[in-house]
Figure (cartoon, one colour):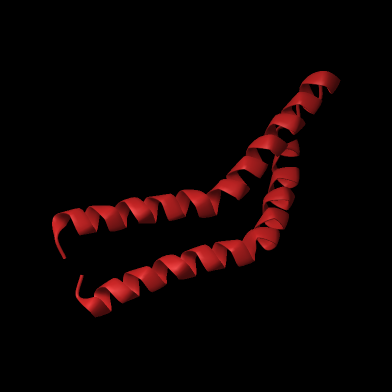
Length: 88
């Protein structure tokens, strides 16, 4: 394997990581903003109030997007395995 091929694999791996993690991160961000807005509007300043809705929302998102995440990671691993078998 040459340097440019390894850099392409690293770039593809980074994109796969971003694509797989993006749904959960976006949901966590949206839930965090909504809860923070709720706290600001009601003047409830409980620090632990944010964690439970975030954890539940991220867990539900992970369950829903698990087939997509598995397929994306599986496709990337198949490409890597094919390149290893072919010798680069």
